[in-house]
Image (cartoon, rainbow, N blue to C red):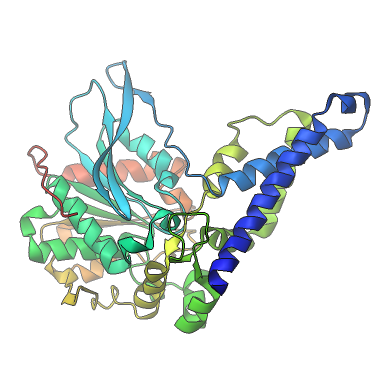
Length: 421
């Protein structure tokens, strides 16, 4: 009961700040204040607008906003999102491009479940959709999932990936971004042993903690400092009365967001102060750089407690993937069983979340993969987000990944398969 009340207290604080922002903006809009030549009126309205927007975004799932693009044929093609597999904790979706023949390159993007929605990869999707068939894992907010639908931990996550890859068929290239890299590697190994013909052509792992001890960061140090009991006591709460998942134990998105912001509090504080000034001067806009970034950054989702705790314990503390000791439903998963899949790792030289060395460890685990089918890349000057978004991704990493896929992809059409519910 205590944890449920704490969850509702956080939501109350968020709701109150959103209301204060809306109230300040509305108050400053009264015509009578037009007679008062004071910059404080404009600043009050600006503070209200920025505050209301920031706190309202914390509980809203961002839209993909990918409606159209101009193809190589010079025509505008409409993009629609179709759900191929609908499961309780996450869907497999496809960005369907109208008026275009299916592309030979079929890419499954495995999005992180680390506090943000899959829309965090919006720019990645936009860059790939031009000349690829793009599919993505769209994880659901744990607060909206009734307790009656059961648990969801890293083993369930791995089996979801197995189902998605099995459904899409072997004529596939998988790109895992950040957090899911270890579990995507495990899912591929699981398929290699259970259903070898369902393996993808290529597997690209971008900035993931395959071996967290290979290069220490603040994230890995935190995992070492706290015990699992302390972590459960400090981080886990139960979803409050407002949502369908009431009573479900979760690591709340609002708590995660507090941690994200506290790591760079000065920078975020300055960004919001500058935005308030721009708003007061009339220089801000609906889709300016600040709003584009923070509309996504502030939109957080709850993770199930079992997923968060099992990630910390089994991936970071016990290093089950790094030591090739991971099990799924009691069955050992041997990464050495991967033999046909070409594997590439991508790291950012300035990544302070998953530092260089953590991801490339995957190549050492893939003992069954010939050296000719392995590759790695460290992007100079790139931080964690730069390796899948921004100019480093667009100009350097994306071309390298697509060249790797083209080198190792076989021929053949898509083969859809049934998926378990």
